[in-house]
Length: 190
Ligand code: B4P
Image 1 (tube, protein in one colour):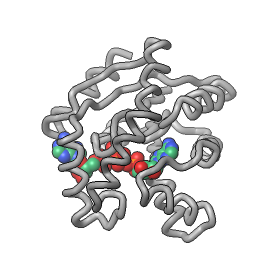
Image 2 (cartoon, protein in one colour):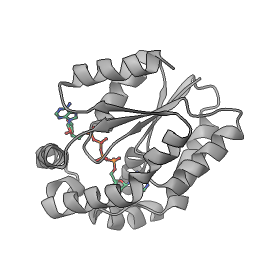
Image 3 (cartoon, rainbow, N blue to C red):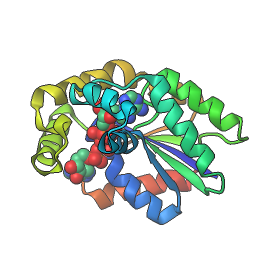
């Protein structure tokens, strides 16, 4: 089973590359950002709580996203594998994911990190914010807050996978196809 963690700051291209990877490898795409936006669109209590945090560039509590991922793993028992996109975003989430997979006799195959400079991230997110309707993309101040959240809470997750020898970093600047090619090469070596 191929279980891939796609890692990187907001706007690094995780969602973009995930779409190409699910087509090539037949994996299930688990994006906590998409799952949370789904809850917001349905107007659930969870969605209303998450929206306040997301619109302010903050992370949603660990137990909320861990619960969503646990439900999705249970609902996809026949899957060939998973792409975890935007999850884990804290070390506590990474530990919980390991436990969830171990209980199913599975494990993470590897983490691939997309490296992109802060300036390029801001440019990409502001561009997307023009027509995505995502409030967290439209405002430079919120984008900067998301990058700070990433640097303080999410960047340490890379060390978690480095200690397990499961970490690879690639250049996230280039054409979408160039970056996809680099990811495919990493996966071929698993
Ligand atoms: P996410 O939905 O995960 O959003 P993201 O990090 O902004 O996006 P991504 O990296 O996928 O960017 P994309 O490919 O779309 O999170 C949103 C919020 O949800 C978080 O801030 C947080 O509040 C909450 N949340 C989610 N998961 C959580 C968790 N686990 N714990 C707690 N809170 C959580 O690319 C961005 C743009 O760049 C696009 O417009 C794309 O077209 C463009 N682009 C992509 N590749 C490019 C390339 N090679 N060149 C130029 N542009 C490119």
